[in-house]
Length: 294
Image (cartoon, rainbow, N blue to C red; front, side, top):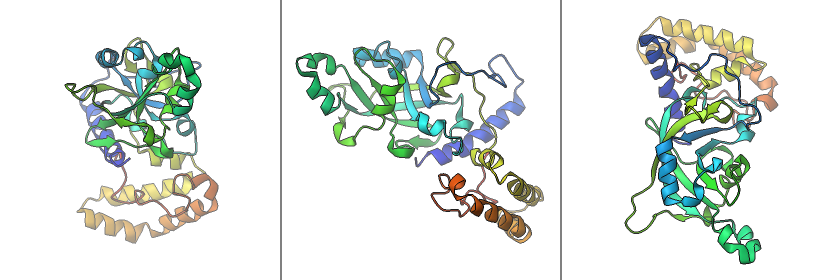
């Protein structure tokens, strides 16, 4: 999404500054938390209690439905894929807002199959939302998913939410909530599902303070050349100067490390293809000016 890069770039610095200024408290997530058993791994904006009540007031059928208690941001197929960098990791525990912009009833096939039970089918609903995190906006996700809230009759599981996030945009109409209704504004907290404890409304997974791509590279077959490249970059940055001076210094002094890193990446196209867009050229944000969380 267009705003996600800006969001992940700004949050780690804010988190580091906060950690340096404030002592650890009981509010700090566990350093080594245990995931909740039997919960699908995915990332969502988990709605706070006032927002869940607000949603239920406008959509009574959503009350008590687990799948209506969050906005799906990253589906299981991506969150559970170890070959992808954990893009949302720096955002764990951050708060955000969600504005409902469109709605859809049951999929056409389901509505047709419902027949005389059409009233029950009508209780199924999917809401498209736009999520704002800091200065960034998320309105579309990787893999054709879109931020969504969903529920259905007698259904409160996470499978429904994942299917709803992939629904055809042709199914949706602009959400008005009625002629006099204001846009539905909701709020919540970013977390991975298996670390979200609904009873206390807290994310029990600490944010990752290092850039997701850096963590991914250090867990890849190219850990050693990446570490050497990173050490050279850190040395260039530590000597200060303007952005242009540091960039020139990096190009002049880290050429060998950059070449070795590229040669390593080229050896593993299957491992790096999903991250580098199917090619093996190093991404633009692996540069002296592009890293986050530093």
